[in-house]
Length: 306
Image (cartoon, rainbow, N blue to C red; front, side, top):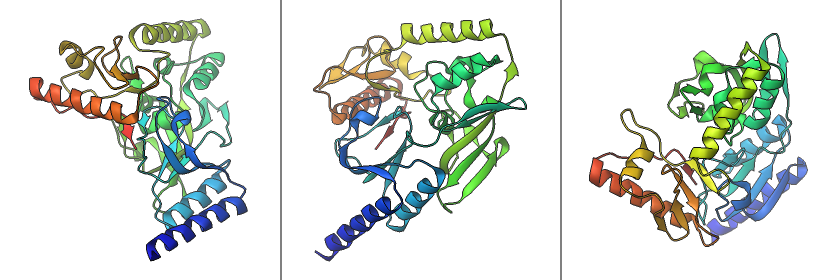
């Protein structure tokens, strides 16, 4: 009884602070439409800060009340359960956006998506980032997970960041040397707000050609246009998960409404509208069990399950 009243009063206070600071939000909302997988149940709040100050106020409030929260940019690389493990989701979609070049460096807000970023680079004849064309992610998400393809990755082109430190709730500048990068992972403990990149001048036609080629490779080899969270498992030092899954003959295998893509065994897609988050989770468990049984390899998820 007392615990319930305490939590309820906290939620009322949370609601009040959002209103006082003109922070947009949705209450008791299904999270599925805000993700690339289109899966996930109801959360107490989806909050849409529009600037750094609003975000700072929001994070301080969440920390004060010890509320679990999750941040989404493009909503890719994440699977929300039917009953998510967080009360609050912070969407970066309404944050102020900017993208410009100065003195050979490209300055961008974290909520710019990689399609728009690549178009800007092409229009300004800046080459080297074509590997990322077609990855369904925001700048912030691609940095946080050190996205990569075709032998290149985001960290190779990054200069520095501005983040909101989650421990201090203060804004912090990080140079590239301050960050530890590994395969699809970084040690960034904060919300990425701004990034600075460095690129070499290149030929417009050559950039356009590489972008088109990479995009075609993705469309031909991946379930492009189907609902998914992207690649499910991380690569190992001496194995590629999709190859192991393919060798096991699991392409097209399904549990409930979740199916291993027939086009690329590293992807799980929605087979139909009956698909639930739990179907995907059970399918992930099944794949890991079979790979462990046959190859004695423990697969590690690349997507985040919330």
